[in-house]
Image (cartoon, rainbow, N blue to C red; front, side):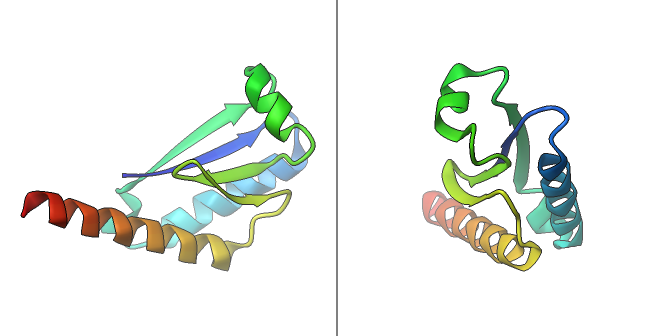
Length: 98
């Protein structure tokens, strides 16, 4: 499972745009890939640690805990990163089953 985390806050226009980009990219992926992506949203207003790390860079997108983008999310770059992450998860699952 690949986890995509969107860190933002309420009433943040760029966060809304990032969320729309994420939704569109995931919707365009093949069903088998999209089903392997968990989207988690977190607010800097709810978590002091997130606020300290990211307050000046929201929206922030993490893929499996690693920084992918901040401020603006490029659909093509996100699609490529998600496809790579999902392929990596599939390879790891195959190795575990052997």
